Structures are given as C-alpha cells and as structure tokens.
Amino acid sequence: MTISNSAYIQLPKKNYKLTETIERLQKQISTGSRINSANDDAAGLSLSERLKSQVKSYTTGIQNLTDAKSATELVKTTYQETANTLRKMKELVTKYQDSATSIEEKNNIQQQLILLQGDIQNQFKNLKYENKKITTDSVKGKLDLSAYEDAVRMADNSALKMSSSSITMEAKVNLTSYAPGTTLDDRSLVLGKYGNYYLTINSTGSVGIYKYGTTSSGYRESMGKVSLGQDTTISGVFDGNTAKIYINGKLDSTFTLPGSGYEDREADLTIGFENSPKFKRQFTGTIDDIRIYDKALSDTEVSNNYKGSVTRDHLQGEWLFNDGDLNSVVYDTSGNNSFGTFSGHAQVITDSDANMNFSTGEGNMKIGFSTITLSKLGIADLSQIQSNTSDKLDRALDLISSEIAKTEAFTHSLDSRIESNQKLIEKYQTSVDDIRSANTEEVSSQLTKLQMQQDTVSDLLESIQKFNKDTINMLVSPLDISKY
Image 1 (cartoon, helix red, strand yellow):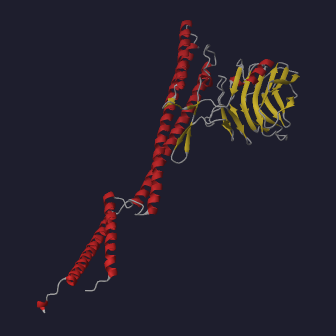
Image 2: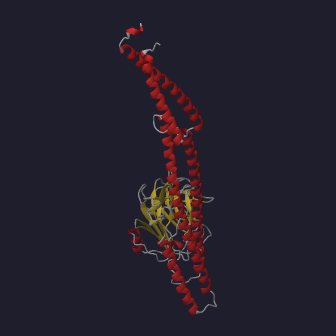
C-alpha cells in the first residue's frame, strides 16, 4: 500500500472544513437563518442589517405618528366641546333678545354666558398632550406677499362697513419693490375695501390714502417716503373734512377736504392686491399689524399705537399674523370676527416654529393648531349683549368648524402615513427574510451529503493512521529467525 505524504496531510484539513461547514448548516437549521455571522455572507449581512434598521425606523415612526394622532384627537374633542358651548351661548343670546324675556331672566342669562365664556377659556388653557403644549402659542409673524395676485381677503360684513365719516387705517410694511407705475398698477395696495377706503404706497414711495365721499380728486399722498427693505408703520386718518398721514407714528401731512360724507359700497376687504376692472395693484413684501378704526385716532393715539400701547376704542378690525398655523385662517383679533382667507402664494412667515414635530421614519411631520382665544372668537367682551352678538357667535362657530375640519384633515394624513409605514415595514421585513432565512429542506439535504463525505474521510483517515502504525511496529519489532 502506497500512501503519499500530501494525501495524508490534506485529509485532516478536509475533515476540519467539513466539520466547520456541517456546524454552520446545523446552526442554520436550529436558528432558521441562513446568515448568523459575517462568515456566512458578509455582503448579505450588511444589506440585511441596513434593511432591519429601516424596519426599526418605520416602527418608531408609527409610534410617533400614533402620538400625533392622539394629540390631534384631543384637539378635535376640545374644539367640538367648544362648538357645543358656543351653541348653548347662542341659544341663551336668542332668549335674551326675546322681548318676552324678563329683566331677571336676562340677568340670569348674562351670568350663564360669563360662566360659559370661562369654560371655553379653561378648555384651551388646559389643552396639553403628555404635559406638552399642542397649540401654537402666538409667535411673531407677518404676511408675506411675493407674487402677482398674492392677497388676503375678508368677506364684507357690518364691522368693515364703518359707521361714520371718520376712519383710521394703519399697517407696518416692508416693501421689496415699488409699484411699476403703469396705468393699471400705479401703486401698491396695503389694504382696501374697493371703492370705499384705501391705504396704499405709490410708485415713488409716497403713502396714499382715500375714503369715498370726501373728495373728487382721488388720493391724498404723503410728503415723506417709505424706503425699500425697511419696516415702516404708516397710518391714514380721516376726520370729517380733515385727512392726515403718519409715518412711524409721526405726523407727515395734513389735508383739508372738500367733503366729509361716506357711503359704503358692498365689497370685500383685501390686503395686498386690488383686482378690479380698472386697476391691478399688487403689494410686494411683508405687511403686519393691520388695524382699522371707525373713528379718527388723535396724534397721541397714533404715536402710542406705533410704540406698542395700542388703543382698542372703536377698533373694527385687527390682523396681526401671529400664528404659525399652516396658513389656513387669518385671524381678526378685534373681536369682530372678520376672518380672512389666503389667495395666490400669500403666506404667514414667523420668527420661530411653534408646531410639534414628529419623526415619521421618513422625514418629519408637523402638527400645529393655532391658539384659539376668546378675542379670536370675538367673545372676549360679553358685558353687554348687543344686536350683533348672535352674528358673532355664528362666525365663532364657523371658525371652530374650520378648525375641526383641520383636525380631521390631519387625522386622515396621519392614518395614511401610518398605513404607508406598515406597508414599508412588511416590504423591508420580507426582504430581510429573503436574504437571511434558510431553506431548511435544501440545507438538510446538503447537510446529509456533507455528513456522508465526512464519514468517508474519517474512515479513510482512520485507515491511514492504522496502516502507518502497523508499519512502524513492523519496523521496530525483533526478527524471529525461527520463521525462516
């Protein structure tokens, strides 16, 4: 029998490799996984780990989105309770205004309204989720108008019609460009109620004011100019036969008018853009802190407003743009509920983001609801029940209804994102399983073959070892001469 050294040396190595492979296959069968270490498939392990990380990210995203949905549902419930309270208040106001209601009953209704008013205030004050504020506290913002037809529009109502020949209009502006000065675009519209009253800036930077019924010669314009790129507060005051223009709280120009009458023409109030058959006047830049009064403010009041001590006497409309609420509603904080809507690319830009941010597994999702106040609802003052109180409650209900619709839209969006995450989890987990899962039937067949090979190698190795031992014994044993 001839045994080569190389064959003898290779057999133990072969046996070791077979043992190693068999152990690996046995582990695949016991774990059900084809890849249990980098030695099994380094590239496959790396890919599957990345996919598992995605699965974990989307799973965490679902948890975060579920939290966002819970917060949204809490807001919705609060808004619905507020709507119910407002309906109760309207019923009471209707009864109050009934001629058959006694003085004693009216006094009782007045007390009930104050209590319900306090209930609404408490509902919003305690609106938190996991001890975190859900709604956006007021942040400093301003209206940004950057393209043609960017505007905010408030529907015509009794508060905006004015009731006298005295009017005050004011706003803080920051122009990026003047009006081009064409026939149809001779000035930038800050605010205007078409054909009734206007606050504008012309193509050279002069402030222009107008009120129907006071003059046949059109606008009165300031001596001073509004500089581009600078925050500038401009005010226009009509007081009977006198008109005044103020720049940054200081009197700039005074005019004597040939008439002092006023007749309202039914029209919406617009901010930033006038679209009429005759004019197309677009403001480009930012507008902030707009107020309209149905009285003439004094020099002192105009100055105090500019300095921040704002008078609220005869305040008919106030739009401060201090809500980062996804630009769905422009709130009137005068108490007259002249809420506005956006058109074009008009938007509110704020100095901070007060929304709640939730990581979804694939980017972030913002959830934000404007901080509703009694002032925004127009029911901050119920010391007297007036003829328009019922109308105010109707507009407050409209506002709450729009906010409820917003929560429903958020809920729909969150449900869609949760469903998307679930599908992605299933997709990535299937990919991980495809990469890592062992085919037990195939592995068992392979294992059987390898075990048979190992048995053959072991037998051969054992035979070689026995042969070598016998040969060595023969060489070293004493010679028995008697056998010859």
